[in-house]
Every structure is written in C-alpha cells, then in structure tokens.
Image (cartoon, rainbow, N blue to C red; front, side):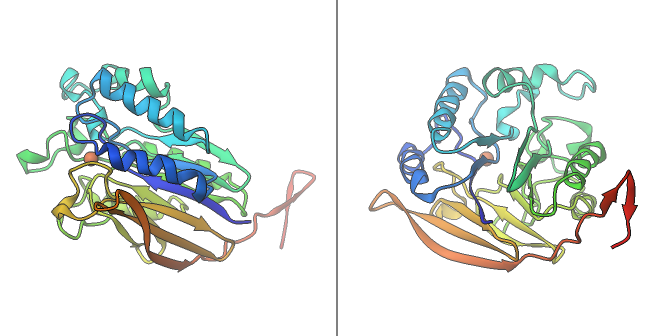
Length: 288
Ligand SMILES: [Fe+2]
C-alpha cells in the first residue's frame, strides 16, 4: 500500500505570495494524486482577514483533490495581542481559528497513515526566546506536553500506517540561513526522535531540505510559494510516497521562465521495519 502526500509550505498569502506559483501548484496537484495535502504553516504574511480569506479559498480548491492539513506558522499568529501572558493565548489564534477551525494541530487518521501536528508557533512566548532580539516572534518552541500528545497518537497507530508529524519551524539547520527554526533545538530534536514518527514535515526556512534527523526520521522541509525564497533560489514543493519498506521524496522546482513547476531531484530512503503490535487474546498479550 503506497501512501502519497503533497507537502507545501509558506505561501504567505498577502503582499509576498507568488500567485503564479500558487496557481501552478493548484493546477498540478490533481495529476500528482495525493491522498493528503499538507501546508506546514505561514499561510498569511500579516494575519490579516483578507490574507486568511485568500488562504481559506485556496485550501477549499485543493480539497477538491484530497483532504488538506494545515497548521499555523509564526506569521499566522497575532502575537502582539498577548505577548508574554501565559494561559491567555486564545486571542493570538482567534483569527486563524475563524478560518481553519478550532484545532491548531489536528489529526488525520486514514487507513494508510496518521498525520498529526505539533504546535510550534507561539508568538512572543518565554519558551521561544533566545539571546538574539531578531528572533522575537520568529522562533518557535516544542513543548514536552505537545510531543507527549503526539507520541501517544503514534503509539496507537497500526503498524501499516505511516506516522507523519507536521510542524511549522525547521528542525534541521538551513543550508543558507544556518538557522534552526526552534529555540532549544537540541532538546527539541531529542524529543522528536522519541515520538515514533516516520516522517517530519516542516517549513519556515524558505529553503528546501530533505535529510534524516538523527539517522532515523526522514525530514521534508518544503520551500516557499512566495517571492521570499532564500538566496533567490527557485521555489519548491514536494511529493512524498511512503511504501512498506521505502520512502521517496520528489522535488518540484519552479521554472520562472515557463511559469510551471517541474519535477527535479528525487531522494529515496529505506523505511525501517516496524515491530508488529503485540497480539491480544482475551485481554492478555500473547508472546510473539
Ligand atoms: Fe514563512
């Protein structure tokens, strides 16, 4: 059973969205036959109503092909409404929820996969602070509680289901930016490795990156569909196919001259075998 998803990120509807790119993705997606489409955050540029409306309409169009999974990025959080006030975060996310529903990290559970999210976009929050002033409201953080919730979801998944974790901030260092998306990134990586995820989908860096985390979890960091691609490199998005024993990540790269996305590099990974779940008989585990 092959599970195929399309992963895009950071369209930034608003002043910097590249409408030719978002239109080209929309036109191409039905031919890619995804079972799920993931947009890993930064749907808007400044969390404005018009930007959220454009993003919502775009998601609606993509949903004609497959369910669309979205999660907020740092640009989708109205952090200036509740800086540094714990337990009063509702205002920050009110607009996002108005357009994309109450859950900030929903779950899609289908026979082929469990797609779960971990919220990393908290705006100006103690956990996201670093010593660098420019990081304020840009960096994210992963709480222990959020990863505990995701780990429990993946533990309940059936062995044949791919375990896909979506978050906004990049969990590997950007090649050009040389930046991690998360504050306390070493701790975050350790926690991510313990979640049981097969695949992590993220964005934020505006440069594509496909690699292994800790030699174990395949990470797909998608580029942007905006004019803010890092180093003026062509924008990218990914199609990912998960088989029983392998995972393939195909890059689709923007051709500015022809205004189309063209299939380019392909990355292939072996998928580690998963131990079968213990058989249960009469409420007792049967030794295997
Ligand atoms: Fe972004």
